[in-house]
Amino acid sequence: MAQREELTRFLKAARGRLAPTDVGLPAGERRRTRGLRREEVATLAGMSVTWYTWFEQGREVQLSAAMIERLGKALRLEPQEREFLFALAQHRPPPLTGRADEAVRPSTQQLMDSLSIPALVIVEDWTVVGWNALVTQLFRDYAPLPREERNLFRILMLNERYRADPERYREMARRLVARFKWDYSRTAQPQVFETLIAEMQQSSDLFREYWEAAEIRSHFEDVNSATLPDVGEIAFHHTSYAIEEVPGQRLILFAPADDASAAKLRRLSAEMA
Image (cartoon, rainbow, N blue to C red; front, side, top):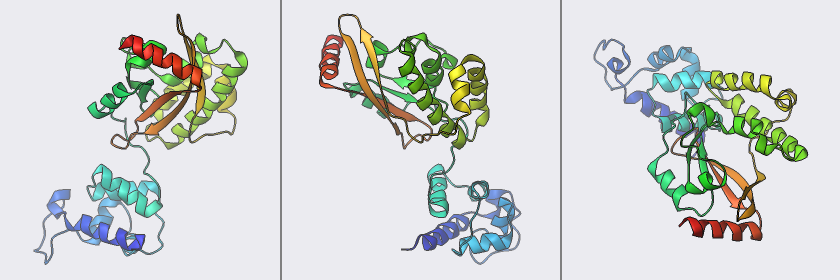
């Protein structure tokens, strides 16, 4: 089944389920079939009838992301339908819209609590919104911190505990800024990032240096460590994963980086049980 054919079927079905009164248009004369006409969809989306007709017919018409967004709003698409439209039209996920839902779903929290490794959830501007007990034990307790003090990017770039090894800190900062630039390029709410960017430009020489560099990263994996009295240093390899149910949220998992670290983490987990 050609994707262009599926796009045609999807758009026809989407406009076919809407009546003019659903979108604020007068009912007009009686219609033989329910649904919006192509010219009505085009008007609502702010595009020409010809372009919309060609697009719906599956011709090789390339619409910008902004035009597809307007089309999705005109057709009253649900979030999953919006993603489906972008996938068919541009073969990529849609841009993130608005402030991400910061409520951690019970199933996500249950998953984190069931893990024997540290896990936390951040939203697109890197604010931590969820975590498990091992994060509190090994890194920090986010519970008493107000939202503006739970930004992981700010913490990693400015907290003195990460500067003990200058060479290691410089490498971490380079990777962090490269990934942060990627997230900034995809956001639909740049003002949220720009407030933090302005603060970092005032507070961090390394941030200014790397922000002007050309490097970007679409993913971020690295090794970090935590040191606890009576336990010693535990090295972690951390990776992040998109949470499909909540666009904009990412789950970060910290897996032991070696056998010695795994043994120490098991010991700590046993003591906490």
